[in-house]
Image: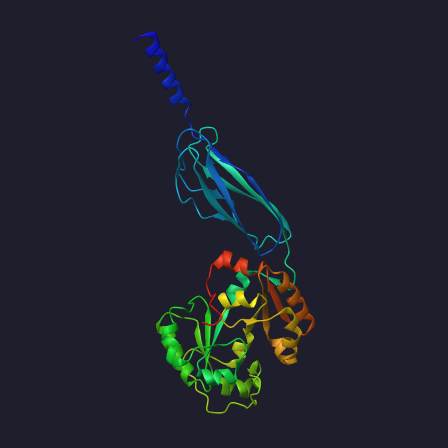
Length: 350
């Protein structure tokens, strides 16, 4: 081999040996500031291959306790290519503490085979009127009125949705098996049949309200029943019916909650929790005054908006108006979507 050929061969070998992958992330530390306990912190770190050879990830990233990742959608990056790594930190249980959470990324980068990313910040304790989206999710239930639409239009239990008994089977794909479903009609006859149907379909927390509205009226004197304007209130009569999987009105009342949604009418119409009531903040006091002192003391109210700001004001105001349990969703509807996507977010017209 001539001198020139040898030089070229050595140059090629040298360049081949120099070709290496290199992992770069900017920034490597995310300071999320201060959040209320219950806030779900979500951040996407962008992993880039700034080297000259293919970057490989032999295993999924690992995290400290309390921090999770969605994993990497691809395991190889060509030079110049990048991929997002979504990291989540649930601040529940960390109230009052400064936290530092680590994420470990493993690659074939010879200089940094294990790259450490960091999330840091402070978690303040939630105020008495604050609750997380997961708190609301865990306590939420569907209250279903099985009567005909014209009867529902005259009056209903606060926060109920109308699914006429004849249409219930077509609604099964939309209902959530992760949440309790309380069903009622006038006497409990239809609700008893409806519960049997839902139980056969795997709704193991579906219950009929014992005796329907007739029993509700006798036991609770119509508490939390709202009449439409212009309708003359009348007590419900009739013999009460109860079969398997029934709950008396007092048990339902113990778990009763209503969501007040302070988002715009347009946002509410696009997607809202079933049974939620769309209000402007200026109408809140009028709404509160429409309920009896007993209803205010019995009812759990969750206030929801886009980011938690108006909802927090509303929850504090409700506390001064006699509501013993009024909370705002920390971070608003955005936090619900971060955790649960569009679960239980229906068009308001459904």
